[in-house]
Length: 201
Ligand code: SF4
Image 1 (cartoon, rainbow, N blue to C red):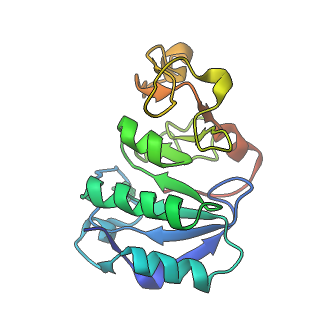
Image 2: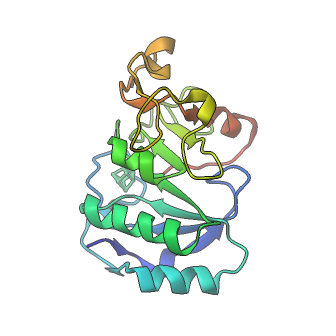
């Protein structure tokens, strides 16, 4: 089960570049960020986020084009099922996940159009600081929902390329190297570095 905090649900413009996002705060966070901005999200609070509630939230917020999960809870299967529901029932909607983890599984890259990784570390700063350890990726897809054809190298099931084991983090020598970032996932963190916003989540 995935739970969200209804009273915190809002439409946001800055968390995902160029998107009008419906942001839903997910509780039962399994992260342990130093300087956590919302410790209450580690608790088992809120209400179950069901496909019917997702549909109602989207219907009540006309004009949004991205459904943003702020957190991922403790039930990965339920999270992926919700993402699959949005993909199926709202094909024009993009799907984003703010994860506080260093790495996420291939199924996450497969299900989401935007994935943020990396715990918040006060000494590194949030996304809008060049020193941040956090990264936001945009998973490039074709109109058919597959990974960008130009980058594909052979995963027949998902269309994703083989994992880029060198990884952009590893190539650039960053601290939080992840070895499982698909080559079709573009690091767009730099988009935040030109703005005076505080997407510290
Ligand atoms: S992911 Fe967010 S809610 Fe979870 S511990 Fe980190 S800052 Fe707190």
